[in-house]
Length: 287
Image 1 (cartoon, one colour):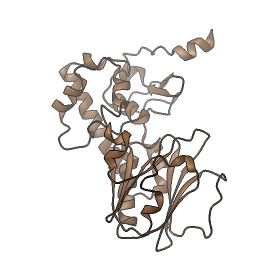
Image 2 (cartoon, rainbow, N blue to C red):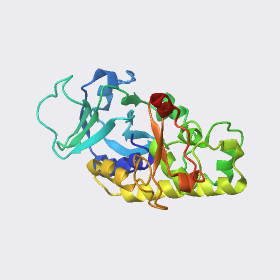
Image 3 (cartoon, helix red, strand yellow):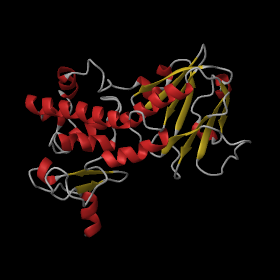
Image 4 (cartoon, helix red, strand yellow):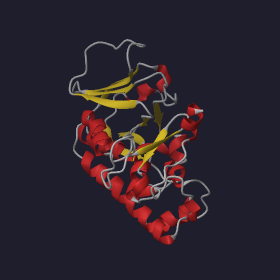
């Protein structure tokens, strides 16, 4: 799933490639991708793109005097840039293509989604705050005012485990499953630790790890073409998705805890005092 660093890089890429260009066609190929109908998608046509923005994991395109095109790539969605779009109309129901946006230059981008769970979402709105997911977002962790005191205030009454708190978009915008693993590994903290029980020193360490991990990921992705961002994300991860590999810090074996629709990875030596965390799903399978 694209998270804050990848969406930030896509925002920069689209700002460079779209700003000042006219949208001549916005074509839904998978009707399920559209979550709004007023204004219609066709309201984007004939409009000039004035810039791209990011709200959490949402990508926002603004047009001159017109609506905004807001996209959430969900778990399996992606944006594919093409210097020259194919001629002709794409056929609905064939392949992963969900939406195509064409410019007056012949260039443009496709929104695609792999797999059978269709969660890619596109909104055409007058104001991005009309999108429910954006209206619910918590503060951006890379904002200038997201300091240690602001972070501590968010966690003060949190009764959840810290892994779940970091992933809650209404608490902190933009962090998902992968980067929460990376942040907790950098902070040397168990994902099962209760957020409200962090000491001031632990809160300070976690805040520093949060900002540093996301900032470094953004810098690694900056300037990359859209098609290279997935590979860059994967290559930069130290523990997430690396079950069974050695920890790059201490050499211990990276372990996993599985859930019904996701999993987390961690290093026992770095994060849990050498003790493996209980994996209830695996325990049931072994019985």
